[in-house]
Image (cartoon, rainbow, N blue to C red):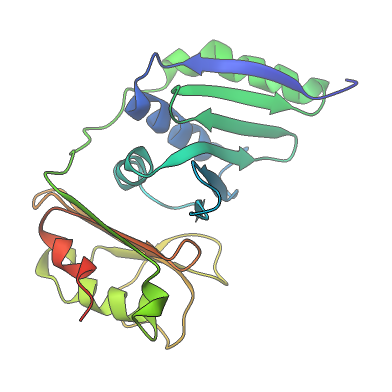
Length: 215
């Protein structure tokens, strides 16, 4: 193969949640399950985008990425780059060799076999804060402690520190000065929280919006 080949895997016809769900399912496949997902922002001068380690559950992943001002999400495998256009709701593969093109064509032929999205609980209210490092001395640890004190997140917070490869359940305080990310999701209370030191962005849905008020 002389140059990379693009193969359109799926046009979701504007259904952003369908595209994100299928992207997440492909992310969990053997070819991509250990890869980090990167996201380019709509405005690169104002925003760093996202860098997500594997292990985030599907509904929290879709809730987070569907709402943020992102242009493109992509996952780099060994020989295939998966790329999702958020606004257009299209999935494509960029293939580096013939074997990758064959694998991508197989994905395309079988993508209709992926299940429909899980029930996504769209939030009643969304609150967002950026640049928290200006107001907090240890933002990841301080915000994690706030979330951990909320009863609906008890035992439901997931953390991926900078030295770790994926999100894992965490029920104890984080070491001081930690960098990385955490998120929590509770379906019953329609509550969601996520923060990461890469983008320095806090996103809250539902009854946790007071976390965006820095005191």
